Image (cartoon, rainbow, N blue to C red; front, top):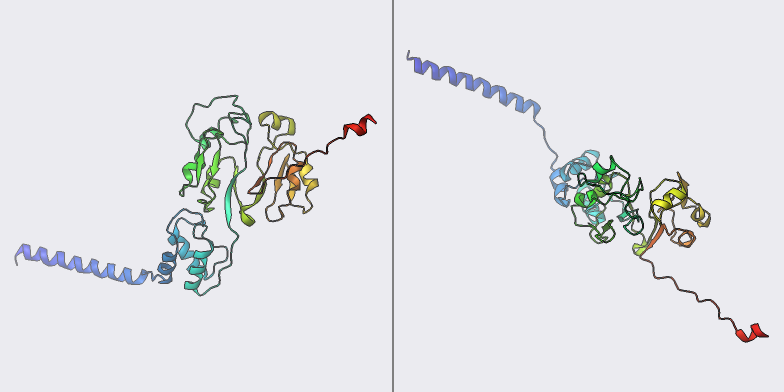
Length: 288
């Protein structure tokens, strides 16, 4: 028999054997994907930001379908509207979440915390955090190198050149939490937006004792506890020389704001306070 023909027959036989093996393996280990995963993925915004706690929107959709529930699963970018649409696909009921926004809890601007040192290393907060306390000396304050801004995929943050601090654009913020993770000093947190976007919070994370904290930043929380005593709703706690306002308990009464001696507590989107004029003294009555 012709050697070439023999070679062709042998190779053809080998190919058939391998084809049969591959076919058998495919049939044995085939993964049938639930078609609802595609339907849920279509309802998601496709941002793949990780704000939901998963690597991407499809992974998030797989988790929803696998759990047959939306408990503990929420897309901050799509918000309640997206949750309602996903719930409709899954035949579930979506629980409404209170809208949140990123908040920068530091007022260590160039004016409030004048620079004592100059950093000339890599322009990264994560890197600078490991090397020194910061330009103004606060070991907990904002380093102003913009890791949080770089992490934001929604153009919701920028660095203010006049203050050196990041600014959150509330209308753009989707509360994905990327900036929270990017900040090595845990200065940024997600808080409830509040009714009519009104919020009250301690804009400081410095845990140094009062005198030292004030030395490094004139508007630092000094842990005096006056705000804790002033709050009628037990919404403020004091720990490690630092006050914290729990937004789930705060009733926005603003009593703590006027008690703070360093103006470390901010009131956002409130109307301006009325200025009460001192009563006029009648000079005639004094002379009499």
